[in-house]
Image 1: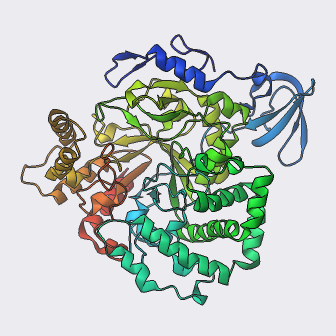
Image 2: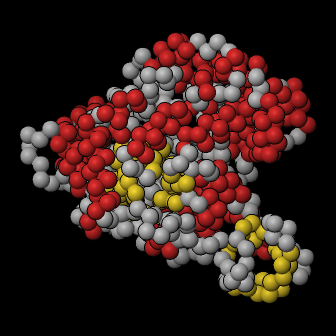
Length: 610
């Protein structure tokens, strides 16, 4: 990382520009604190850090032998041949040093001429009459089938990553315990192997959908009890045993963390001292004594793999990668030497949040990430992109820089820390190529110069929102995903009726002036509507405008297509049931919903006409 005039050798920016290009200077106390947290890399880091390159690139090493991941040994002399295989290799130089060599195609996978429209789905909210209180993978299968019947080409879903398997279930999909494994709360219990041999008490499960909110604690308690009975009665047989062996230590670490979390809580910092490291004799003893529970958590992942594969078969399902993980979670436990202590990731103050935001995730220390051969990043990308054909990188600007917030300050007291963006983008491109999965980068908010150019160079689709863009949608870039809104912003109906403004006032997310100005600015993006237009009229108008975009992907939320006035999440509204609002219409009734049908036809016509 080469410091810029405002970036020091720790990668900390001394100042930053807001959305209005106003410069703000970071307090020296913040810089000093972040330098302490980041620490000093070892003097030989540059000689052992991984090399990330493309075929044909010149390297900073002369003659070397490369052990390719397929076992072949190749000799190189100063540059990679144009036909050098992509992948993760090991380079040994003449002086005996060994380092990782990551060879990337440089651009993400995207078929020539590909264009499609699809649904953005908050899966937890998408319940059917047979769900147990929460939308599950069988419901995703039904939505995928509906989308295919309508001519859609993809479904975009919220992150499905696992959280701590304890009471006090984390509601936000963007603060998981891991980015490598899925949340078993999304299992359709009746379709788990062995379920037919156990009394599922289906009526009690379905009764969990009777309440107005999604009660994750009650849902998980019920599902866990029944799933445990199925596991002890069936166990998965040889198919599970083989699968578990294939997953290796990565799965074992997750299952071990989950088993300990059930006994000692979901934050590893509060565990007995001898269990706080993912190795050692005490941990081995624990696994031996609690082998059945560890196996149960591994078995849950096997069941999730089976159901996810069935749910996504035949359609691109774009999975969402959160910017980080919970500080007490499994990934933080596994990679605690790579994560920063005493800081969290967030965003500086902006027009939509005058106090800034603290998202609660500890950031990866850039030099420690390199020293770990980028393995935490590689595993997170690979696991999230697997099996479905698409990846959405939340807050893609985090590949370039992240806003670090000291734990003893507010979000406004943070600073930007730089990351090796070129390496990270090349790794994303390699994983995209291997999975044959398109990649979307969520580049909303304040985007510094050069970010979108780098995304375009690497084949990462940009994100365009009707609520944010001043240009006519017909002028938006083709290399993008286009949408009206996101889970953090008002729905069309909520904006048009003013219900969202009322709720913002109740939650005190800004001053009256700020909130009124925000609503007025968004309404400007819905031209051509009379004051007496209905919410349904507003939804149709918004998607007529969206359909004008030449974007590669056109996306509509189920919330908008159903005329829902409440957004899934209102940032800063801590007293609101964020991420816990079910859709007003069950999955079985979605295909016949009149407004949803009209939105589908509008976007289908837009893609066909483009």
